[in-house]
Length: 255
Image (cartoon, rainbow, N blue to C red; front, side, top):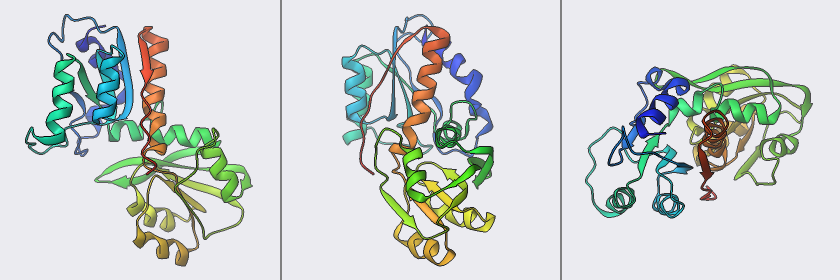
């Protein structure tokens, strides 16, 4: 597939145009030398457009790197320092960069939040969590209540460890709200809605006492760890539907 064909394919299901409030420049952020003609035989997927993922994608022979966190975030950017190094590696390898931020968090089929909810086995999943006029998270319930440790095990069935557990609410958790990444400030929305637990990537110091005093359980699973699922689901969809060779580049930060 060419870059233009891949761009059309991704736009067909990621609903990027519905999230105009996203500060990320979603879509193709860096072209290759011939978007309409050069065949891309391998697509790499990663959470971050950092130097390591770009270098490893280039070494693997990828013609496109698809990421959740891209290089362009709406403001002018001087092409210096680490930003220059990342851009230079993309151009040196004639490798395109495609970014999908909030649309990938919110997507029902392949998004981070619906993906996490399905992984945990939540039922009656519905949209939850407003950010800049966009609904980005989900909420649901368990048929049978679970403990916070059982919830964490469902969230990370391969044995990863959450960054932080705050067991401040009910011992038996029935309802859960989920917003991946850096959504600690959205804890208040989960409290107001009356959920038993809030699952996100990271929380700040100021949220500790809010959770404690509001008697709600919180799992901060890690910004990175809660946002690998979306890019991997897009990768699997591309591989299955278009038979394009893919690879996932895992660069965990522990945060």
